[in-house]
Structure formats: C-alpha cells, structure tokens
Amino acid sequence: MSLHSHPAYPNFHLVEHPLVAHKLTLLRDKNSNKKLFKELVHEVTLLLAYEATANLPLITTRIETPLEAADMPVIAGKKSVILPILRAGLGMVDAFLSLMPGARVGHIGMYRDEETLEPHTYFFKIPPSCHERIAFILDPMLATGGSTSAAITRLKAAGLSRMKLVCLLASPEGVERISVDHPDVKIFSAALDRELDEHGYIRPGLGDAGNRLFGTR
Ligand code: URA
Image (cartoon, rainbow, N blue to C red):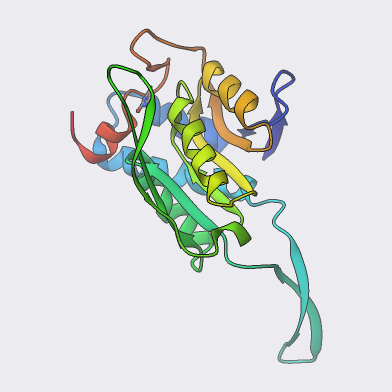
C-alpha cells in the first residue's frame, strides 16, 4: 500500500492500493446495490484504517510465550476513540472496531442551517477522557468541509488534540478547508475527486453516501 501526501496539502494522504482503487470503483457504480455498497464501505474503511493507524505509538511489555519471557510491542496509551459524523460515518465504524475492538465510540451530528448556511451541532456525545485519546473522525464524503471543520473545532474545544480524519472521497474544496482551518489534522482518503458541483455533491463521486448506505432518498 502506498501513501502519498499531496504537494499542495501536506496534511492530505491519498491511500493508494489496487484493492482500494477497485473497491472504490464498485462503490461509485450506481448499479451497486445497498448490500454491496455497505460491504464495500466496510472493506475500504479497513484498508484506510490500516494506514490511518500506522503511526500509533508503541510501548514494550513483557509477556511469556510458551517457550520463554519476551519483551514485545503493544499500543501505548488509552484506547483510541472513533468519532463517526452522522449519519454516513456510521457505515465506517465497524471496520475500525474490528481492528480496535477496545476503542470507544462517540457520535457527532451536524446540520447546515438552510438560511445562514452555518453548520450546527444537533448531537454531540463523546466518551470521557477523550482529550487523552487519539481520535479517528469518520466522514465518508469530505465535500465543502464546512461541517467537518466545525466538528473538529468543537472537538478541540472539548480538549481533543490528536485527531485524524478518515474519508472515502474528498473534494479539493474540502481538503483546502480542513488544511486551512485545521492544518494539524491529517486527512486519509481513498481518492481526491475533481470538484464539488453546485448542489454540494462530489464529482464524479458516488452520490449520497447516507442514502446509499441506508436505502433512503
Ligand atoms: N455527501 C454525500 O453523501 N455525497 C456527496 O457527494 C457530498 C456530500
């Protein structure tokens, strides 16, 4: 698997791997049904999680193998926290939990005020002592980046300082927004798409991730 940071956005990491590329194409295909879409989101997220967790700190602990005592690495510090942005981020949670079953899970719900276009938080429930944990924010579609940026601002106000943003797809506008507002937050994505359209959809994109995951319209 190779990981490239973007020349213009040093905090943006494109996760490149033939399996990611192949599964992403299936995700984009409008003929992929809800069941397949959900499975593909899970599988691509597993591969993204592999990269997003690559520099988790390790400490050494002493264990007994059946043959001898040995000093071996384990992940240091408190369990990570997984923070899906509702609702499409929910589709990425199980992949992270399957790799890190002890991780805590918080939920963040955002909506955009139709008149002011300002993002608002309607739900914010994070586990205690989050400020001591490494956080993985799950937001499959980094579109304008407005509500994601607002969510990160809110998380910083709650004391979190070590956050990574994990997306399936990103738009240049969204990456720019997070890079400017939160240059300390690394973004991991399976693709950087061409543009945002006038309705806020990522192009070529994959459509509405929440609708495709949950079968709503
Ligand atoms: N949210 C989606 O689900 N899809 C987009 O293309 C943009 C935002």
